[in-house]
Image 1 (cartoon, rainbow, N blue to C red):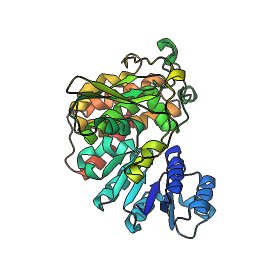
Image 2 (cartoon, rainbow, N blue to C red):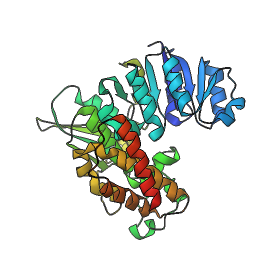
Image 3 (spheres, rainbow, N blue to C red):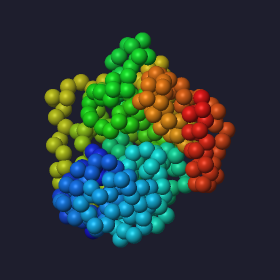
Length: 359
């Protein structure tokens, strides 16, 4: 690979992608960022992209680059004009779907960290062009190695309220939900971690990526085991690795890696490993897990309702558990709807958001 287009360059996955690109002398043809113009300017200086895109036209004058595009269309234009055959999509939320579709429709490979692309429209995306850079899906891929599997497992940290009393969770605030026990991530993914919505999304992604519905998740508090594969012969293997996205990114960009990317897991300092069930009393979204794995086209409903519910929670218009109530209500309301084209998905997304906001 000679060059990449990087969407979401100022987030943690984007920053790690640039470290790996530099290590392997992979050129960065284009950078796409949101509002962190200061960091973007540092990245421009170091990586010399040919073109840049940002979220808001108002920030354009602050960007130290002669060729700056803006908004959702700007991102699509960057992909269209790029010569790179690989697009790293580390955008957050529904915003990431259109770029994934654009890139795959042009036959480009997508190193995908944007969960919502497959959750909302997995049915309409050419999976052969997708390489996941989530640590869970990378772990599953690493373990499966073309052997016949009977079941796949991914793990969850449990989020900010893993150890809270249920009574106390009812009064949890937005800032409480951002205190993740294991690492620092963006707002949306940290809230999704607290509600376990991000794990539901990862199960849906795994369904599309590996063409399998027998998938489950459980809590592993230390976040050292990311995935497990249960093989048809009765054996189970686990993927241990440090909490560091550079490993999946390196494989996505290089194809094969035969040198140290991370220090090995220190098993003795890790001590015991414990697996715990994900309980619907603490994570109400888990009530629909089995149903949505059998009806993955309903991912569009959960995603749209969830994005609106997070906005309501941030603006103190609903409680922490109120977010899950909004999502489950929309899920019931739209459970008999099935989009048959990507245009219908886009229309459905608008209808679901309107429904949630009118409640």
